[in-house]
Image (cartoon, rainbow, N blue to C red; front, side):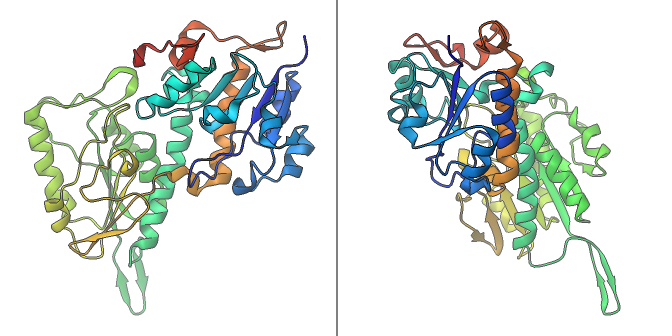
Length: 375
């Protein structure tokens, strides 16, 4: 049996600058005994040249030849089935699939006899942390959101004492304290802002304080637990929602920058900020909506456009990690390597997935959709 063949294609989705392999991970896969093919120009937008991949041991080929005979195809966003003609029957494709939003693509993978492995469905368990692309990419997104908002904001973030007078520190409010929110807090603190944050999970209060920010929570009403299955946020009691909304409304009115990060997997993003709340903010304030591509946390936000309402600038990128392509690609590539190498069977010379992680990420197999979450 020859060496298992792994292929990486150039991303085709609009605005996608990332790539699913780095020279570092190519070397590591080859060290495990795989052969590796990369489509010409696949890494250019992420500052990785064809020469870098070739030096790491990859073959540089046109798309059809790169995929020809591939056992495994790696992607950031899952490629269209048409691009995968020539891959081995039952080939694995490990990428993000947006399984709830792109069901037709999942069905097309099943019909083509491919095995789709959705990196978004990686379980939130300790041993899978190093494989979790949502966390690695959200971390960068939280950082970029603060920088982009600060760049648009017409004032300085830190307090500055100057001979001409004092510039007071900007107030930054982070809504949603997952991976992206925590990085947004840390970044805004490093830039010298006064930072506060809120979340539906009471357990995040200590995390907010540990980063030197002020937690904004209703103290007097029950129903905040909000911790759902697998560490994701869920919805809260009506009474709590109402009290929290009032507290947040009065708090938002005093903020200069607001970063919203709330997402519930497989659902439209929850609405956190209404037009009426935007109207209470100071002109020139900035809101960055990290959930804009999933319908938005902020009323009136539009992907990849700055919308100005009541003098407040609202922005959000449809693909925030793609604005940091070199680091985003390096981390994404490592997540993929950590995933496949963890299951590498030396005797068979290929990865063999276990039930816990394999069944969680596998969308299609043997011509059918097999994921319990999609049935």
